[in-house]
Image (cartoon, rainbow, N blue to C red; front, side, top):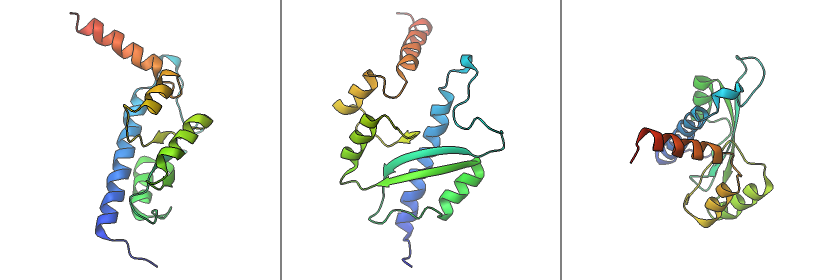
Length: 145
């Protein structure tokens, strides 16, 4: 069995930490007026299932049962399904995933100002257009010129 170096462990911990922070931020952006909760619709004690697509930090992706992932899942009562993609093909895989419409809950966007991503946002692929317009409207009301 291959030993994982300290650098790889730190990279993995950093990536998973960023992903978890983004999941909290994105869950806070939900529309509370509808009274719906995204994720599991079952018992509140059931773990939240989160699908993630990101770049693998090393040549060999982290094992699905690694210590860091288990600790995060236990601390957050979640079940993470991480799809590790090589950096060499990530752009193509991202384009295919966005085009398919089967988008993971969290995805790594290398270039949020790139033409592919901005085009998909404008087309409503992520369901955030209403949030953007509401944020712009709220900002304009809060900070009139």
